[in-house]
Image (cartoon, rainbow, N blue to C red):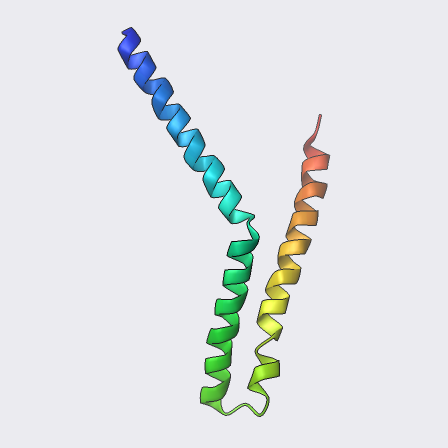
Length: 87
């Protein structure tokens, strides 16, 4: 293997690591969580209006609240799981 090929491989690995790090930051960002919550609220709100729900503005809050609570629980569960995996 030539030195140039090794350098190219190292650059490729560093670029991949940078992408993976950015993806991880996006997955845990509040911007992403809030965006999903808002979009979920809008979709459910439209659906509730279409089916003629009496309180669509209030009832549409249930799925986004469930989503936010689940993100908190998953974070906590991940910490527990990671703690159990330490040697």
